[in-house]
Image (cartoon, rainbow over all chains, first blue to last red; front, side, top):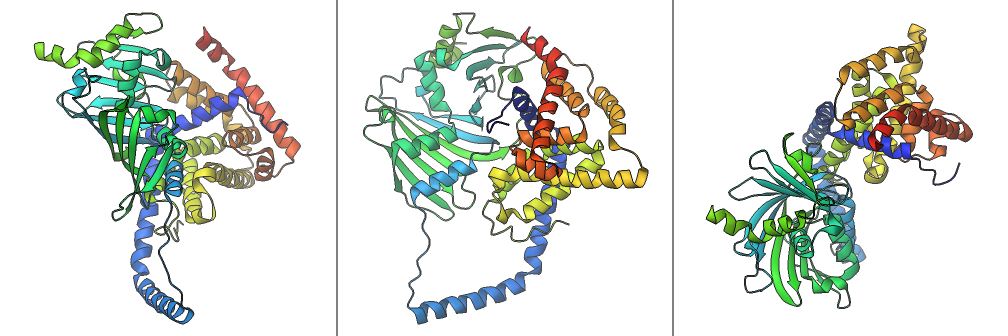
Length: 312
Length: 184
């Protein structure tokens, strides 16, 4: 048998097994396991509290004696920023659904911000799972959703009436739309990879329970033309990235500050990252590969959406 | 029993642990069910194996190897269960496969969605395999090496390789009509 003996059936079976995670029966059993795990832990903590105090006290005495007699100078262990980012990558390598609140503050003075998105700070909700994401508006309406599926396609669902959906491969999406979509969304695993390779990392002022890391692009990196800095707030216990602030630039001028704040982890329904998951059976779906009108449609949605809604 | 030992001062956080449990319960349950063909027994086994694994999580890299270890532990539990069943009832657990196949067909009503149809076909395809083939192929897809499969099933490496190969062939044959429809 060859060392790398993968087979098409393996991938199919793997997808089948992964798919089982979202089933109600599985989640009920997962809840049972978790309840048991956490309940046992609480019992253990309360039952051993006295012993723990005694151990803690004797441990403290021993530590003081060791420090005094041995002349040791104990300093707290301090992880460097690279290690913190690597730990965060590991924590985020699990394919779970994460909900981020995304606040976008565009820079009105920048002439590239002609779109309606620039007028006010925007709040959106972003669900991510690996490379897939979907965004829904957080203010006033719930009439659209934007996402990227596991086939690297960007889709837009407009829910008014019977609903209309458009979808096209990400590499065929026009540049302004791609950039706006990129600004509104975040693939945390990719961002952390980029931060490790293309950025200089600095320790920020950490508050209790969190590490703060400021990342600025290396001078010769390609990303320096798009991003001025990234601020990462990483939970020191869970290693999960709690907050990300990205300062975006274009040709040296500020474009926007985008803040991603982790709200929760959870399980999204199957199909949440696909266009069909946001439309009903009667909705019309237009594929960008087949219909060139999709491109101006995408552009209109991002650039002229708000003036149009005011007029109506 | 599920004594969690030192969970509060763990290397991985509660949040990560919860995510791990949520992501692996379903696959583990599907695996256990494919081996014992009884939902209640499968659920008990998964719950027990997960708790035991979590209890010892400081000894392993749960994120990297957890699923593989969980599947191996379920394999052992299922082998013990089926051996006991044979001793008590004198029945071979494979004798129940036809009933299980009927259960799968009844549980999943005819659906237009190909995804559902494929899922049902995979379940049927797994039930058509022998116990060892089902174990071997599923251990393989969660990352076990041929040696690890052989160790889990207490067979030789060559035998493990043959089981994986035959399971793939059998599944491919069973799924071919659905896959052709998908391509058309």
